[in-house]
Length: 478
Image (cartoon, rainbow, N blue to C red; front, side):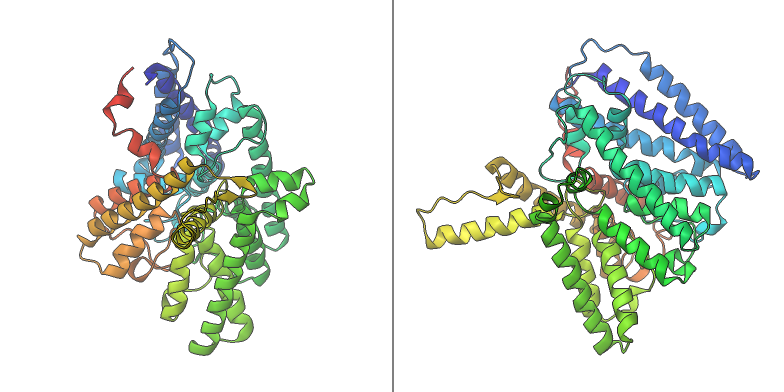
């Protein structure tokens, strides 16, 4: 591993984190918040460590694949550890601060804060901003700002970008990163303006836009989106949640006027069908078995399906009280998640497509042993290496889920709580069922469970491999 280059990347990340904490400090100063010293010392520590790491001069600026994976994993660890400082200085335990920060950067939305409205205003803003920073990817932000990071910097984007296939929108990595952030910022500003026009306060509109476009789900209100009691606000958020979980490559095509290519995306069609199908099933279930009205059933089912399918995690209703069939459908969409190349978590729709096509191919081989039929996705052939990696990813995903659930069960909670806690964190969703339902939080869990769930959130956001790479001794060799 090119240790000096990786250390320099970590230094850059810490510097950007210090800069991103500055708006929270300014807000705290304006409102005379008690969190002013917390952000002052946090920024100072980040800046000092960043400056020390940036003094390191790498012998080579060439970044190989393993360097990219190692840099991404280490950067996310360091971001989480330093990003927890404002919470620790405000009186939270450091473990709780790390949990909340990891949940923010990974856009999970699981929280240990029972009443977000009681937090200092600067900390509320930092809590939302961590999700916005992590949604598109902090390393992608670095590539957008610093195009001359080094040769092979595309490996950073490949390691951080979600999905089985990473593609560039432009020949240059920096141009691709900037194009992604143009779309990301435009969506954020558009939603913030729309929410303001719908009657939401300005501060709430901005923080909600941060956490919607990043599909994060942190809210500054104790009752989440249900606090506003506005159907118009609910439907605006549904629209932007749905769009944010679409592959940003398709959004880039829309930006260039290539509507036909974007709308004929195989992944987008399946994502839309799963969302509409799940919402329809739950609507019928709520009408028939829960006795709810037609419009109420449609409104609640669509919002909860979209918020969990996109792994955002907002709540307008306590879905833990819904019939068992509805909860089973919600578990399924939590597992699937959004599209590859989006801010959503989960297994990703593209992997589901590849797995189903792989199953169909194996069945055809049994029936027609001499038939040779390659897999295709979006009209292009999927190489066997990608097919194999999808299978390995799914196995690792389920294995980590089971191990995490076993660790959480040591706290004496039920199977529904432990399994949904593991699933909601590795899928980066947020709320689960039973003791961690949409009206509850994770504060009652032990430090061991919180650390395990924090690691699980990182595994889910970075899609497992960058963290596993660090376990190989050969990676640490020069």
